[in-house]
Length: 262
Image (cartoon, rainbow, N blue to C red):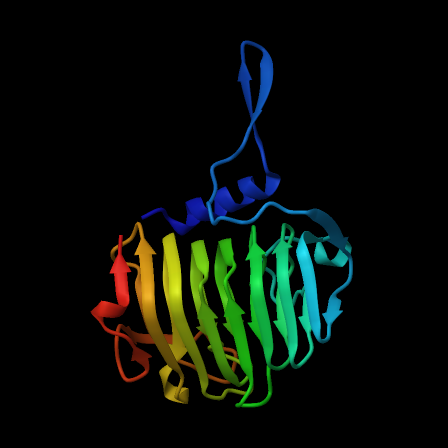
């Protein structure tokens, strides 16, 4: 398995986009090796200097959006603004988020992300921040790569469903916040997902708050020991949550027939 240090180095080389090779005095430009989630070809580009608010449905028509100015840091600092903020009930579809990606997408209530792609995940790809336990964040299709930490973060209440998704070179595909100041039970359904190594875990949940994670039709490529579901003891005091176990359980719902290793 490739170390996280080497992944960190590779991520920043990818952000630069090219490497220089000198051969017989001639400088050649060659692409740096990187993850290969099948991101569609962008049909246009748009720099984003301040967060775009989405109400209703926005079809990006496969435009690549990337941060500049306050959204152009490209680091892992907490508390960055997102490229997109989705109001309750909003849908964002056919969008490519390039680098720098800031904090990706924030969903303030129920939302749908359909055919959304992240070329180089920033702080997180998307964060679910709903207040209502009946809220639903639905991720349909799309994919993400080069996520130094989390892809999807759940800070609020409700259920996230991730289906038909591709992820490669990542820390965790999903994490229920381990140390938010207002904790609650959170739930995730992960189905028809292909996860390609290197990757640490498909989900991390807080068993002491009643979180659940359900898995079906999962394909893991390149790492027969990739963690499917980790158990954590969450807290409300900003301390680092303690990991207390992993594997199938009443909280992490799957069996061997739900996971295929290739």
